[in-house]
Length: 238
Image (cartoon, rainbow, N blue to C red):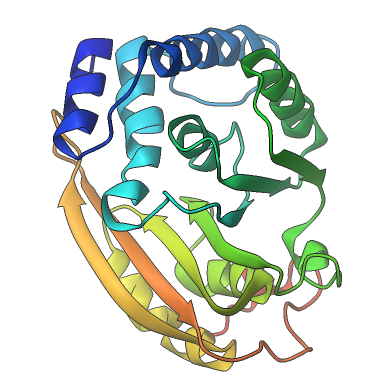
């Protein structure tokens, strides 16, 4: 996906990018590739692939969710900033918090945010299991979002504790999302959630499968969750 296709494809979805937006995505790409030479941030460095598989793919959440409001969003395991920072570029009024377990990624994200002059962003070096038990973060966010970090039963335990009642957890998944939903049924219910919507679609050009799962937080998550670091991965609630 070249830059013209990127802009045009988003415009077809009602997301109009200005020249300022396009300059920020170009700098994002340049900084990502530069830092990637020194640390492993992504296996995808070809420009057209980055624009399709990182930038465009991240923004697909906005095809089905309303980001025009000043939401507080927490992105669990964002790595090099996906999906929340491409969304932040498109919708500058949203407030983004990213938690990641690798400090080198946090260092990159701070440098990136400074270079792109992104306001209303915060980056935390922490395990999601510990982060979700801290009172200043637990059930404080309108939305938790995560993309390709872990299977849904695990992600649900890491993300739902951070979402306030009546807020939402948005899971961005690839092929096999329907199977993951079946696996996650127990976890979603136990942690206070309810599956509200599921959207299936294909990325343009390569036609790979994508799914966006919207889980509404109906009631408070029991205090015993999330469990200690490593446990959700080793013993998923399924």
